[in-house]
Length: 39
Image (cartoon, rainbow, N blue to C red; front, side):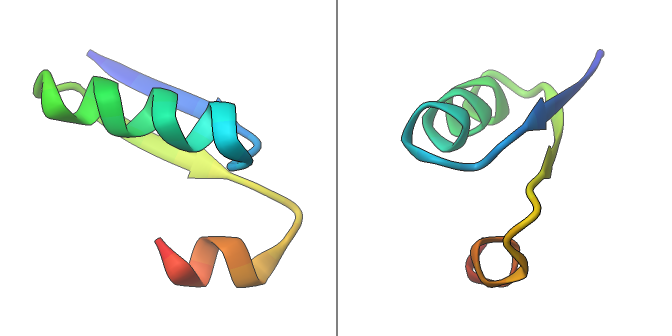
């Protein structure tokens, strides 16, 4: 399974991290390049 998370604010980042911990492939997208670089 693959999940895309649009927006890496508090909710999107936590959601993506939780799914990743369960072994799901996660792609996070955001308009703020600094947030993506910190991932």
